[in-house]
Amino acid sequence: MNKLFAGTALAALMIASPGFAQENGQVEVLHWWTSGGEAAALDVLRADLETQGIGWQDMPVAGGGGSDAMTVLRARVTGGNAPTAVQMLGFDILDWAREGSLGNLDEIASEQGWDEVVPEALQAFSRYEDHWIAAPVNVHSTNWMWINNDALEAAGGEIPETWEDLIAMLDNFREQGITPIGHGGQDWQDATIFDAVVLSMGTDFYQQTMIDLDLEALRSETMVDVFDRMEILRGYVDDNFSGRDWNLASAMVINGEAGVQFMGDWAKGEFLNAGLEPGVDFQCARYPGTQGAVTFNADQFAMFSVAEEQVPAQLAMASSIMSPEFQVAFNTVKGSAPARTDISDEEFDACGQKAMADLAEASENGTLLGSMAHGHANPAGVKNAMYDVITAHFNGEYTSEEAAEELANAVEFAM
Ligand code: BGC
Image (cartoon, rainbow, N blue to C red):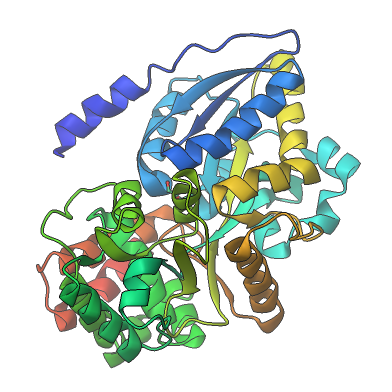
């Protein structure tokens, strides 16, 4: 899509669908949950607020990872018309807080004891200068594989645990006549695979390169190996991958056209929405070589400073999001783990239970790391600089050696 068209599309999306005010006010919610599974999860929140007499004005901006949503948001705030609540990831929340655009949720947070139940890794982004500014909805993670079960059975039924196993499975998928990897060529999707491949080189390497931005590590032979692996994976993607939305790539795995998708656990929302069952129709497993570690991203609703009469509805929304009932109802549909540590995993399916157990284990072992691709490792400037190099390499513009060098250069420039 060229830039001009993208701009027009964004402008069209900015005309939000009309909401309806109810007796207890209304919230205008900007988000990028537009796929079938995401919309089903969002409906849980909308319905919850409706039962409280709070109206919902929907402001969807399609585009996984949320970059387009953030562009629209910037225009709205610049125009002096901030939405009530905005779906947001990690460092973006802190950027808006620094600009003084966010409201204050301290009252509701202390009433509900958020300090005690929200994991510290999330609080790092939901609080600014000791004030609560955002309500955390969930914890997703990016280092997952979603495998079509029939294809896996035909390939011997073993979930790959190493790079070599993975390549053997992909070769087998090819022999079966299906597309080995269902993937959409969009920068954030390429970067989501990159998260997993970097992590598979070790948590120390992930920490050094993606979080500490150590230029030497970014230029290292190990980073060249990462790009080599990205290039090998690129060879298992179909010819029409360019620009494809992530949920269409999930659909390829769902209908057996592709064998596996490397994607965050929002993909599970698509599988569930299509009526598939984990462990029966599809398998969830950590990307080979990343078992025991988690690259996480949490969706939070950043609450903007709004007119005084809109504050009660805004606080009610924050309060609903953090209620244990909502955390179960929403996250079992969305594919994520709850944003509270005190929720039982009883209602969650096998993949959800694994997500929760993996998170707890990684948090305990110091192997819980912020996702670069989804805004939890570095601010947007650095993230976007990385996206550009990763995607250019994925599309054959750089050799692996050039890509490692360009990555370090781009990061150095963006820092
Ligand atoms: C968000 C998910 C969302 C995904 C695809 C991620 O950045 O955290 O909630 O489902 O993008 O749109």
